[in-house]
Length: 79
Image 1: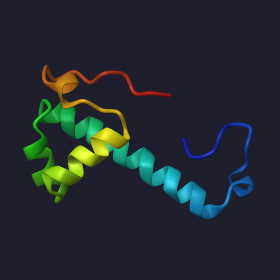
Image 2 (image 1 turned 30 degrees about the vertical axis):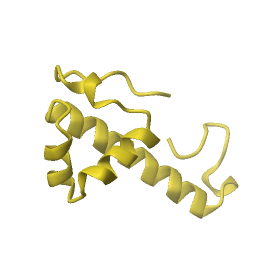
Image 3 (image 1 turned 180 degrees about the horizontal axis):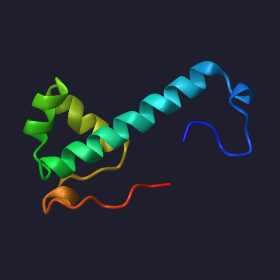
């Protein structure tokens, strides 16, 4: 989540919380899309409104491999 349980939201600069929230949403979106489309990056890119290259860059950023989603079951999310 956006702030560790020991931190109040106001202990963290808003720009940092905003970045964390965006990253959380992006990773969840990618996981859900890869699961839904069984690792098909072209289909995910089409639905996301991004090009395949952008999707591959995001997959690398979040250490996600499309091969892990080919069977339709997502690997567990990293904590």
